[in-house]
Every structure is written in C-alpha cells, then in structure tokens.
Amino acid sequence: MTISINPIAQRADCCSVTLAGNLVHEPKIRYQANPVLAIADITIATHSRWFDKFSNSYKEWTTYHDVKVVGDIVEHSLLHAQKGEVILIQGHLSHQKNTEKELLLATFVQVFAKGYSQEINQLQCSGQLQTPFRLITTENNKVFAEAQINIVQQLLSSTKQHKHTVQIQRPIHIWGKQAHYLAEKAQVGDGLIIEGKLGYINDTKKAQLIEAKQILITKFKAQGKRVEPTPS
Image (cartoon, rainbow, N blue to C red; front, side, top):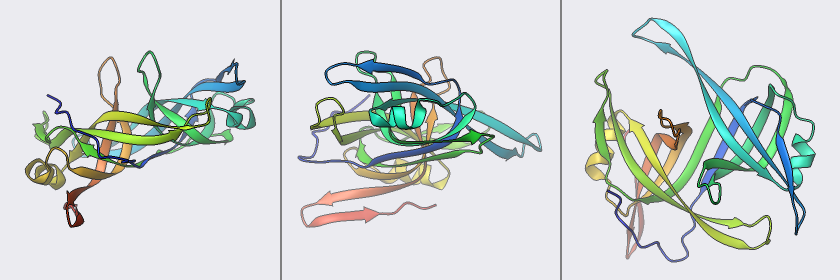
C-alpha cells in the first residue's frame, strides 16, 4: 500500500541517468508543429558481464532502455545514426504522456562507431520514501529490500519553454547489509539519496526499477538536516 505524503514546498529532487550502449534500431524521427520540434524514439541496449558462482562460469545480461529525444539534439546527433552504433545518453526518468509508458528523457546524445559496449549504466537521484522498506528472500536465500520512492523534478518544457513540476514514482531494490539496515531505520517521509543503476522488473510490463548500490537517509528536522549513512 502506498502512503500519501504531502510534498515539501518548493522541493526539487536530483534525477540523473547516464547510459552507454548499442542502438537497437534506427531512430524513429517525427516532427511536431507549433513550434516545430524534432522528436526521436530510440532503444539502447546495455550489456553487463559477471561471474556466477553457482555455475562457475561467466554470464552476460542485456538490458533494453526506451529513450525519448526532443529538440535540436535529434538532428545534430541522431539524423544519420545507424543500428548497432554506440550511443552515450544523459537524461532523467520520465513517462510518456497519455500512455504513462516509463522511459528516459535525454538531454544529451553522442554517437560513436559500431562496436560492443560493456555496461555504462549509472543513476543518481534524490527523493522521498513513499512506502516502508520490505525484506524479500529469493529462491537462492538472498535478501533484498524493496520500497517506493517519489521524485519531484523541475523541468524546462521543450514546447512551451517554461519550468514545470513532474513527479515520478519508482520502486527501489537494494541488497546485502543495507537492505536490513533500511528496513529497520528508514521511515516513510524520509528523504533518500540514491546511487545505482536503471533496471526493469522481470514481468510482461517491464516497469522501470532503480537498482540501488548505496542509499543515504536524510532526516529533516527543525534545526536542520541530518544525513545518516547506511553501511556498505
């Protein structure tokens, strides 16, 4: 159950994602009128490789990220982009209006020659804890904590050229000692500072997920703000 929280007045959170991976298909470019704006929809594949102790072998995993690009950077960077080329993206979490499809809204795009790219998938954000952290045990007896975070972003509209507020809710997963610590210490309404990467829930909807590596709990009090580190 999600607990409603009154947003902090004038609060603006940090939300930054950096990806480097291969372009899955050629950009789908369209143009919007009044004002005329180029819009591109692309999908980036990031690749990770790790050693699996259970099978005693290396494994690879590919994650697909839907990205929306708006404005001059479409024609500057994506007009001649080809499938398989390496794309560097900087942006923030967003969603498609009307459909509420979860995606990444790019603010910077750079294209490199075709090649294989190991994973560059970095996320830094701040927000407010919406639900208590819940401990979950996997089939392999590994424990992680799950919760929901609300991120309030102040964004500049590409069409109307004025700032507007966007709220993004995403689930968070974190493993290890921090999972137990957060389940015990974190409270609904706390601020969180998160470092991790962008992932997706393994279901038919493939909803966006924040896979945290480090989380700091921020306590807001009358005399000031205290930042409480979590164990690594």
